[in-house]
Image 1 (cartoon, rainbow, N blue to C red):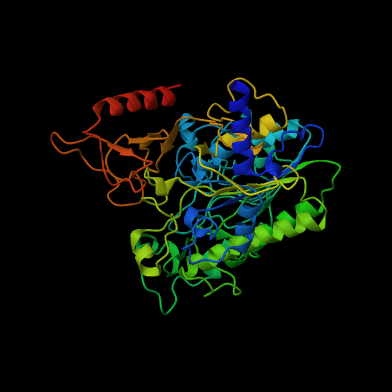
Image 2: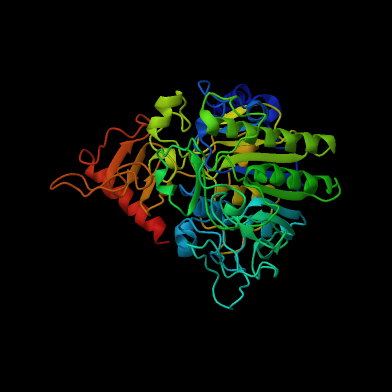
Length: 515
């Protein structure tokens, strides 16, 4: 009877996954795959046509990626804003364990982690990989300053005390990357410069306002009007960036294309003899929404949707470069986003496009729209057919998964919140890498989810959606409890109905946070 059950289970896996996806005979230790992670900035799950048939954006390259590999339909960033999410991806650890990394930071903030911290890049460097980052860093830099004091921006003048002629003392090359070509933070945060291996490219800085007018004649302030003050360039909804220093050759509208070109150049320098890890954190579709002329007006979701089409083209160009060099077959190509899209309800109604498809909230929130992200993984040599995995996955789990693939031991104390989903990559749909997950909003609100429940330790979104926080009414619920599988919109707060579940989840949350 046991043999019959085993055969039935095996047959089920074959029927669901397809025989070719069962790549368990493949030994990545003997022929290590290249690993490329393309990490979008503020892009929603529902933007990709393959994940949302109602999307108003054409994404052929991402659709092809989904058709070639595994779609993780229940994947989440470890936090709902930029810096802590990136920290979680690279370290395999929740950012709230490192207070400096638990919030969004500026372009002059010092590094949020110590240089002895193990990152995914360090792990792969130790495994013999060439490692590179090309794109948005946003984990802090130790700048050299003219006055010997901490780097600081004078918001009124737009100037800082940074000496751009000097290399930064601490940056990505100190965290496992052999090569780096980065923009310090988000593309709406100064300084607007590129650094190559810690040296500023074109260091004789000017101000953004020397090139860009603060307003255009048709400027109308909208839902991002809080950024329309005199310390920002503001042209229209979604097209704004803060005033500050900029390299003379830097152009905000060309940043994404330059990052792509530098990523392609790194790939071009590689060969099949040595495996490489390329981390490509993009600056889009985060504001400013400045799509290429090729895609402007081509989507049904405004400038944001047009910009997403640029992101899709980046994926296509990287795949084409890998294919041209004969490297695609043994390259694990991963696409994800650092958090949900910044896409309020009024944009959904205006465009008929739900960027954070089928869930409540947006970037910054403890609600699912803040942290649910697309996660696509292809590997032609190891995954032969399309599959969808519905189990819980955190972006922190990529660390342990990569380590398991290459049989690399994770040192004690590292990657504390990373759980390998390698068996899923090898074809085991039933494998559960984790049974719970912690979420962290932009204002510091915690939440915990299981396969059935989600508990938020407070009232309100905890992020950018109104209201951010609410005081409990007398005798009313102090938090939120949702049966998340049946109520993905988080509309029916069952806090008062299931006090025992609340108590258990709150204790579980506190145990993980305090670990």
